Length: 196
Image (cartoon, rainbow, N blue to C red; front, top):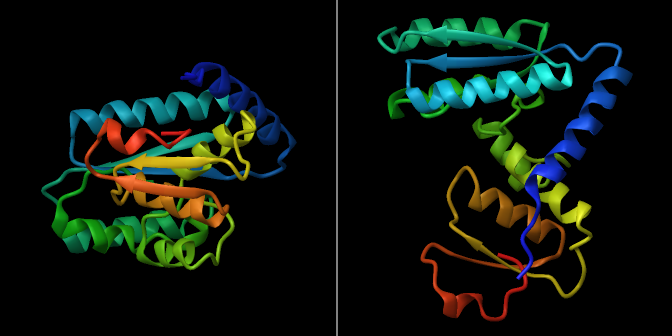
C-alpha cells in the first residue's frame, strides 16, 4: 500500500497558487460568511484565512449572530455577493437547516467557491462547468500529480455525502475512471480496488 504525502503535495500547490496570484492583475477577494459561533467553523475559517494570507489572496470575514432573522441575513448575504470586490464567496457550514438553502442559493455560480448553491450543483452535475468544488479539485490535483489516472485505475470512494463523496464520484466518472462507493467500510469491498 502506498501512502500519499499530502504535505509535499500541498506545498507544491501553494507555490503554484502564489505564482498564479502574482501573475494576476486583479484577483479580487474572497468573502467568507459565518453565521453563529460554531467552534469547528471558527477553526476552519482560521485555516482558510491563514492559507489565503500565505498565498496572497485577500480574504474578508463577514460574521453574523445566529439570532438574526432570515430576512436580515438574506439581505446582508445579497449585499456581500453583489459587492464587485468579492470575486469568490463561501458561506461557512454548518448552517441551521432553515437557513441553508435560502442563503446558499444567493451565491451566483461564478462566485460560488464551494459549489453549494442549487444552480452551482446543477451546473456541476450537468457538466456545464469544467471545474469543481475544492474537494474535487484537490482530489484531481492529487491524481494528476501522482500520475494515477490511467485505464487500470479502479477507485472505491468511502461515503457518498453531499460535500465530499458525491462530488468526487461525479468527478471520477467524468474522467472515465472506474469508481464505486460504499457507505459502509469493509475490507471485502476493497480487494479489487487500487485506490481508496
